[in-house]
Image (cartoon, rainbow, N blue to C red):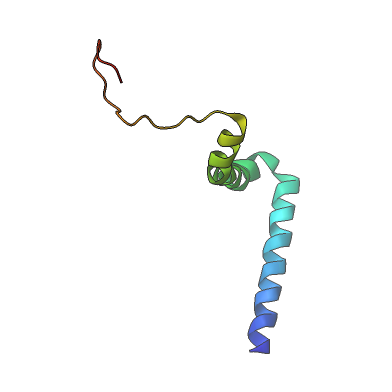
Amino acid sequence: MTDFLVHVAVIAVVVLVGLLVWRRFAPVSFWLVVGFPVKALMIYGTWRAVASGCGLTRRRRRWRWTFPGLGG
């Protein structure tokens, strides 16, 4: 079990260093491949709370389909 954890830690460090080097030497491709999708998922995950806090949401109407001239 200890060998497995050591291997996982070494792989994690290698991946982290690789990502940092990629970010340093090719920032545009790093942003397109890694940065943008991560940022989009973060915004998607927190959008409901942010929109509620800013007042961008409104309550759903009980009757979604209304006809002109009828009260809704």
